[in-house]
Length: 115
Length: 107
View 1 (cartoon, each protein chain N blue to C red):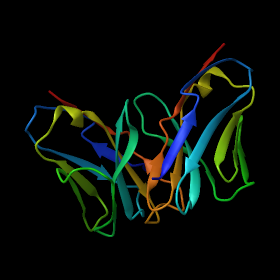
View 2 (view 1 turned 90 degrees about the vertical axis):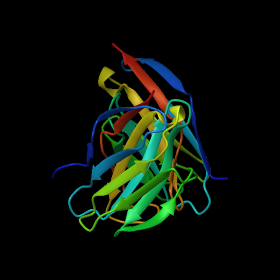
View 3 (view 1 turned 135 degrees about the vertical axis):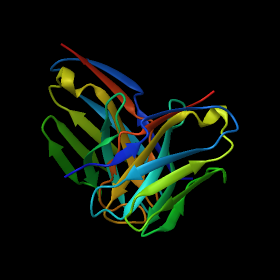
């Protein structure tokens, strides 16, 4: 069974630009969550999508947005990039929604560097 | 505010030297406590889910336990391949992660 895939794996952008990251969940999983991981803050929840609807949102500014398509693939967009947005962005999929009762399966992440 | 705190931040062990990692949590309406392992450059890998105080789960050299306020990950006779960052997370409406314990096991 294929795991969670994320593209691209590495990305370098400059301040002020915008970026779109993509995530394909495990086949059959309808919940996709996004996380930001930095050395200082650790893993922080961004948002969760289930059946194309945002179910939950973390404490991040509106520059961070996402969407989910009918095939459960998800994209995350960050507009007006800031230096502090440099991080590993992780996507995780699970069968259930709303704070998982089951385990989440993580992708390898997209390493975003903002210069 | 929901919070998950892990200690120690880093732990160095000799091969075969057993120890425990701690995860204390204050998560409203906790629905599950999760342990993950993360290797450098990779996403977290699921290890265990614990749902109620007193529950224990084992996998190879790892055993996770849960009380009403904290969880422990016991590592028995660790090997160098157990070196990784171990993350604890509590779930209420979203998954709240601790900052992890980085374990180094030397032979």
